[in-house]
Length: 237
Image (cartoon, rainbow, N blue to C red; front, side, top):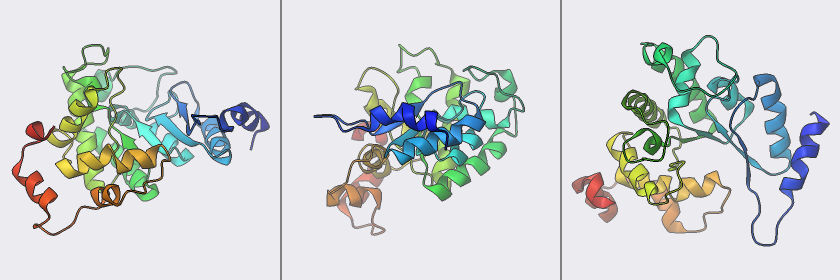
C-alpha cells in the first residue's frame, strides 16, 4: 500500500467533536492504476468510498473492482462501452448515445455491483427538467440513466436516493423518478432514502422500521404494501 495514500487520508479519519467524516469521494481524473491503492487506504482508515461511476480515465469496471462502496451518476456507467476514455469529465456524446450495445457492456459491471453489494446513486433528477440549475439536462442522457437504473434494480443492485443538487426538495423528485422511471416500488424508493442511505453513510440502522423497509414482506395483506400497490408514485410524495 503506497504510504503517501495513507498519509494524505490520515487527518480525515480523525473523529471530530460533532461531525466525523464517513466517506472519501473520488470525482474525476483518477487512473485505474492509482484507484485501488487509494480506495484501500481509505478503507484502512475506516472511511467508505464514494466515486463517480467513471473517473476519466478509470472506467466503471475499474471503479467497482477497486472496491468503491457507492457509485454515483447512473448515466456514467454507459462509458463502459467506449474503447478509449477522455482524461477529463465529459457529457455523454454521440459515440455513447448511439451505441446499441451500451447496456450489454454495462450489465457485467452491474452484476459485479450486485455481487459485492456496491450501492448505486443514480441522481436521475440531474438530467430532467426539474433540475433547472443543473448543466447536464438532456432527454437522451436521462433515458440512458433510467435504462441503467431499471437493469440495476432487476439485477439486485442496492439503490440509494440522491440528487446532486443544492435544493433539498429535489430528493422528493428523485424518489418519484426512481419509481416512475427506475422501476422501484414506492416502498423500495422509501428504503433508498432511509435504510439504504444509512448503509451508504455508515449510519447504524437500529430502527426495526428501517429494516422492514429494506426487506418488504411478501404478504399482500401488509398495509404499506397494499397501499403502495394502489397508489401512484406522484400522489405518494
